[in-house]
Length: 423
Image (cartoon, rainbow, N blue to C red):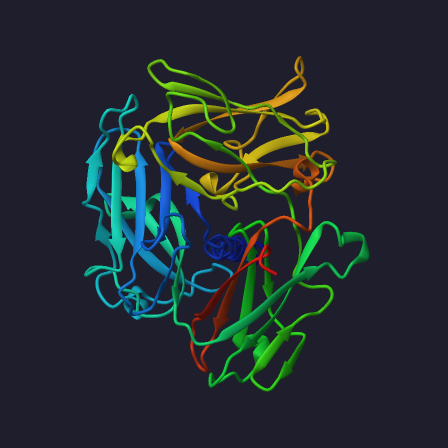
């Protein structure tokens, strides 16, 4: 009997532990329904900008996306407060929202003059129904029929209460072997009159390159403290591969070729063949304009790209100078949140020795790059194919988090963006 009871207790403990582990998984940008495409979330001041707005200001975030089913559906949304690691702050919605806990997306339009029919949804918030009370990280959840278990997609956004200042410099890596390939950030945070009892627990700084989650470093402890200034300049921290300028293609028009495009075929749906891409790891740095990995929905042949831009099958192909026996190639950018999964994975053609894949994309301008995942190590590395250079122009974002004394949440107390080309 005792053995049976012990086994049951062990089972319950194991189950509860597994449940807690699942619940503690951090939030991220994710799409759970393949028919949902072209998700944009940005500050209304500029398309493609970071989804950051000031707390209690008149600024708005714009959310737009397409549903390729072509049928209207009952979409709802809400936001949830998170910490610097994108784990739930475990606050009740009544604590971090001033108004209602969810809202329905009622603003939609049907596509016009497009081969592929879709419904475009768009909202602006904060609004009368969704008003955040605290600064910090928030995860936006879009779901169907009022059921949060039926998620459609999630997106990260930031509510800022600017209370600290930052001074940032970008220098070559202090590691002699990386001086030609890496960019190192040194920065100082001044928290002024904020009550900071322990900088190691009250302040955290996340540094990101080109707003990509796979190129981010969370700084917990400063190198040293001088008055109200926290200095982060240790030789071993915030050292990033400079990488390369992003590849890009211009698909604003489907009537003629444009940069990055080899050929366009028009039928019931357009097919776009991109130029043949090659491994750039051994090439010298070449200055080239890019959008730092971003994408923009645009249509030079129409009036409103939200509803008259069409979709096309876009074919990428790459000479990686490697085979599928050595690893796998993936195509990534902000258009797919730099996600390495089966949707971004490329197939290998043994006859041509090239990797290829197809993405169903809306008209616009797209930055992209290739990531290599080594079969032996399982490590993902874009520099294997793209190369890395100190001269590369990158945007770096600093998100500065502050935990007020006695609070159960972290505020976003500062955001700073700096460009490596402006030294």
